[in-house]
Length: 232
Image 1 (cartoon, helix red, strand yellow):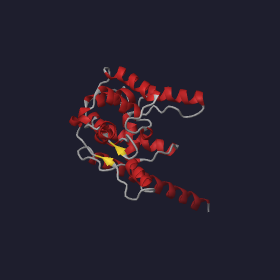
Image 2: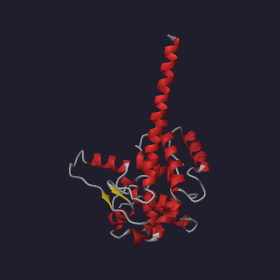
Image 3: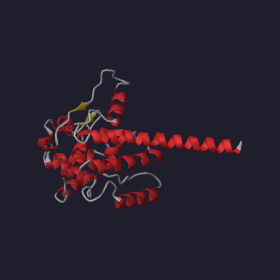
Image 4: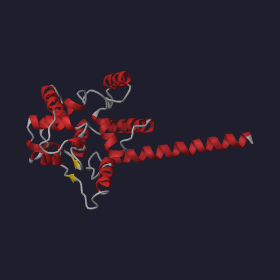
């Protein structure tokens, strides 16, 4: 009986490991495909569209892919300055930022800082939900390693700028530039780019022309950091 239980446990563990390996291979294949193919949708886009269609069955997302060279350098610098100043130096994880975020969260007793890099945020946006569980964070870390191994920094930033949310159902730099300023992503000024970067943590809070004292202050901080931001 004991031998049967042990054998069953080992067999179950082996099946679980095989299933886990297959899931990671599925992620790898998608990331590899996106090295030279543009994502048509992401997990976050699908979730947002589903939520929008709960009240409006005909809802569609505002989303238009634009290549890297048609996105303002101002926006590239603003995003790196705001979200991941060491983007070109790390291999997916900024351990100093993670440590600082942990300490801030520990002191406040709640999660107020994340320390996620652009690569980690892209992992979550492409494949995962917004829930905060240990399993999701572990999977995010694995996908981040895959992304950093398979993609160049330029490609990572290009996809990131094209898929993150900048309004309720507004995804990517081109749609964001049209939605907030009535221009293309290539035309964004330094001020406009810094403002968009300041919106990233709470993208659905701001509509066109809407500003808050926090947004104005954050925009000025990002503007001050942009000249030092290094982009691929």
